[in-house]
Length: 567
Image 1 (cartoon, rainbow, N blue to C red):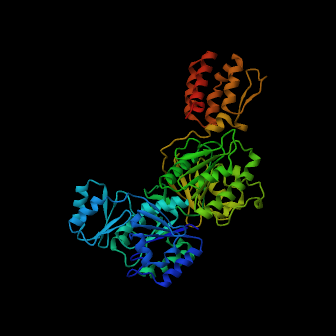
Image 2 (cartoon, rainbow, N blue to C red):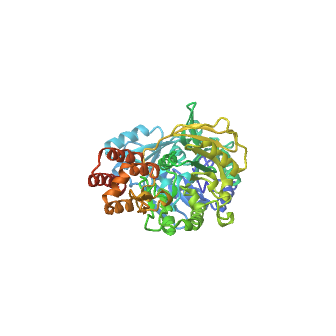
Image 3 (cartoon, rainbow, N blue to C red):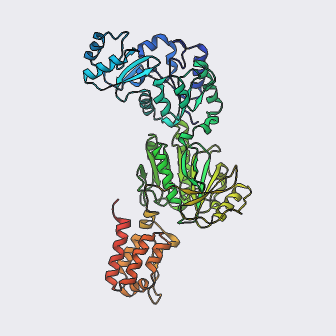
């Protein structure tokens, strides 16, 4: 389920003329039976609410006093989010004939037209207070306290996230809560401004509108409203006609595929930044150590230490904590089994708490390779909100391809990438219009409709060093460097940069200068590390420095600065 939490206003929303009908209470109980949490968010004082609404215990939490007080009906625990109003301020209001006047644990409330007198009293008192309106009611609260604040505090208690909330209201003081929720619903009797800002307006008013909402929630988890939630869409780039291209945050799987060095890591980094900015929690599995430096996520595991699934899940329980899982220490043949165990744990967490909102699998062919039996993988048929990043679609196990409905083809051979995707999906592909694009551009194909079209991808704010950890301390396998010397008598294999530096310190001058003169070092950095900047600096040394000791020191210092210096 996407919407695991439903938050409702009281007066004018679930209640009509101060009371809640039995049919609305029945609908709330049906919703609660679906294993969703239901939260009442009201401007009323708690004691008053308990008196007028005896069935209040149907709610898992109550946010009273317009966000200032949190109440747990099952334990009777109360928690204040603001300070008690000074008695001198209350006396000032009474002295100036503000009546009726209600004083709660935090809130002070009256009615129009006393708002001007209230503002003057706040000014005289020197206290920091805000005034919130609600269909004629005037509420005085500490700065920053509103329904959105109270709702967010409840969600933090329960380890839930605003992206899994649908909220419904009718008046001015509901605006902050509706803006904060993933889906904002206004009942038909709501103020025009609230209806204008809502994602959906019910056909019916008051409690009947809430029953309408609950019925839709139970029917399709509000999937039918997805096209209206454009405010949450995630931008990937712009079409060649200049139109913004974005994807829904709740959708099927995405395949990002293409040749090495084509920009997959750059686009993935931008997508991670977009998720972090909108506070969608993500978990990225990183077999190469590319994303250890990503700001806004904690990395678990490295080239020497195995990632622990229990530790990962504990971190992910906090919806504001993004996690990168570095699997360099896991042998290649063990990664599919690790992926299976990880997926079982993460899918279970998502079912319970609604997050992580996105799974990102870099070098996905390491985790779910095509050569492994399909039945080995326990991938749910309804898995959504995930990205597979790979060089070629046919390297991915077919068991996951059914859930993919969007491919982003990037790099030097988009025709081959799209054709292999079409073959995996068993769909027709017309390559007539597909051509090689510039770096930073990609072909988009929503395979359930239309043809591929090009976009100019957005650029991330962070530029990470690709495969930095793998190149520094991992195993580069077939991309390793070999010191052979001029007579080809040696075959010293450096399978990463640390090994390269150690061997360089120990080899004789003739061997070093042999490879220096052939520009083997810059060629290796460029072709195998895909580090053009390091290659360019190295090539300048190769062209201008013949002394073995000096050239060796210069090149090794370049490597140390880029790959072994502390972040």
